[in-house]
Length: 419
Image (cartoon, rainbow, N blue to C red; front, side):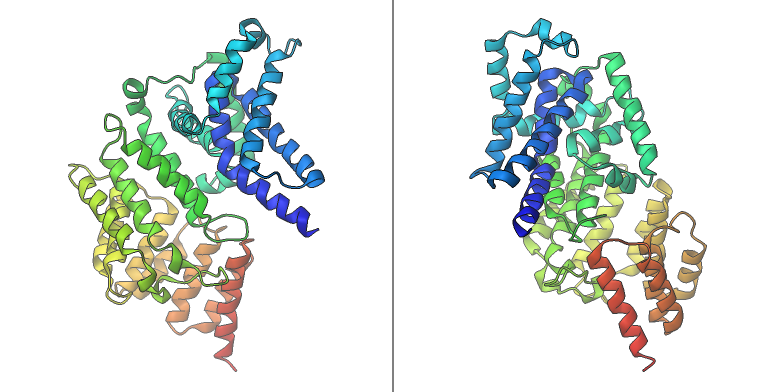
């Protein structure tokens, strides 16, 4: 049983790491309009891995095994005589295409393909939301429920949007080969959004055993760094978003305790914050600040920089944080931004008004963080019974085990005040 569980975890980890890269490589061969075939081949590769690895155990090099099997399945797809893939059969010359396929699976080519696919799936013929959904699914490898959580949508709505996007790609025969400099600028905002969502899912996971999924954060940061290496495409928003990611990565080690339980900002050991990464974030933020117009990434990076520069929680410049949130609300009036602004208002000294704003906030009734925020505010106000009730509401809305443990600990501590 333990062996089976370990194999399942390894397959899941490799799926996260390689799904988008493999699809990107295959799509660059098949052309973007045939994206479903590429996804089918990659999915089949992982199904094969589960079956064979359970029977024979993990191979010495699982990643190389997946590359090899995926390549072989691609060649087999091209050889088929049935009418399902007539375009490939008509254009297929085995020796030529074998050589092309082998090149797709070189490590440097896989990395380049994934960045290209980010821009390709953010095609301007698609609506902005369709671009993001398609890219999160195809290039990043998000599951449907993760896309739904990231975009605050229902899972069924995500599925329908993805189906429509793929049909549009197929009908319009949109190619993958985006002229990187000439046509990528118009797609840059969507690429930024995708990488922002990828990082956020890693920084505060919607499922799994851990609060932080570092591999997602690091992949988002890696892709954004690669984008910064294309100065004809990247801009001040790219710099600001990269700075934001660095400020957050610098605090990784203090965000959870040794058991993976979340640690609140005021309780974090700031000596664990990586000052070198923070300094790098400041360098990129200073570059971003040269822009005449600030984006939401500038403002969020500014907020993160204020937290990173504070010697302690008490020393945080909460008035400045609140000011940046006020500006951010002018660009993004989403419920999460409103909630965070109310938290800044609370710590800047206007507690009563902050609680009143949170209680009137619409759009977060199904998010555990909303109720956990109210619970914490009431606990700090000395109203333990209200705090417990809100923590119980929060507990009913999260499936993440470490978050449940955190909330249960809070409830126990508050109940202890009555003993």
